[in-house]
Length: 278
Image (tube, rainbow, N blue to C red; front, side, top):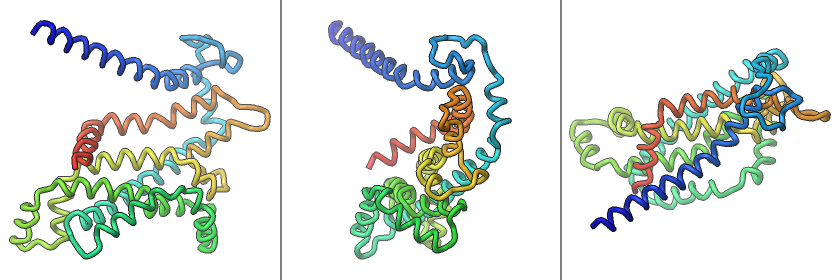
């Protein structure tokens, strides 16, 4: 018994030790980014646990040299609209695939999932020509519509369907006996129950949209329409890279993601567990 207890303690210590090492490896780049954001340009690649001199001015210089507030606004409202659209259409379609059985539903769902295997580079040119013909180049419309109707939307449908499959059928049958329509069942019963899955999808979708670089690079030409990932490239030119300003801007771009995860981490963990349970 004592040997088993010792083996159990040793296993836990080894397990948490490995997790700690992995966590440290993953957090080092983030710590380096913060450290570099306070350094002087002449000491970027020197090892200093605490930068000397400690330059708060790097953050102020970012705000003075670029319209950073505008980039922030562009990224934020695009990410919010993409997230809302993905959750709404994903939950509607997910509910339909999970609860409204119709002929060919499984085949249609399989075809829908197969679109996620198509590399975005393959459809970039057709989408660009389509948006050009609609006169939507150098606007934010492609950055909002394409993710909702593309891979992000399909992922949202998958997540919500997996959750709705776990909801007991008796709830839906009881609501039907009370005279509820399918949409009322979806709106008043299914959506309130799906808060963990919605929180998970919100974090994933917002994070993906916030960090998106490829699509803004394709569709945006004007500086005032740039999003944060695209705007970070402004600190690199033919002369070189202003690392201290780039890291300062990167820190400011990361803060909203940390705030969202901090307030939604409980729902996020529950959602990952429940949507993967099936």
